Length: 83
Image (tube, rainbow, N blue to C red):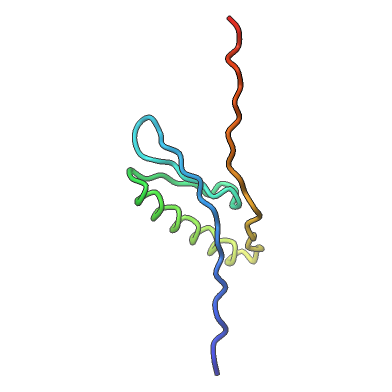
């Protein structure tokens, strides 16, 4: 008998360079799921691991695994305040 195929989840990671060096990354669909890395590659490896552990914890506690809804990044331009 064939095993059912495992479901594959897909989540966005948002990366930000930090002034001290390295990057922080978070998965907006998974509240509180964030990590960091000295390089983009390390940050990507770390967020992949963090998401996996996050989903394992949800499954262990019989909680629903969220599906990601569309997320967007945009830039908002604000004029500098007058002095």
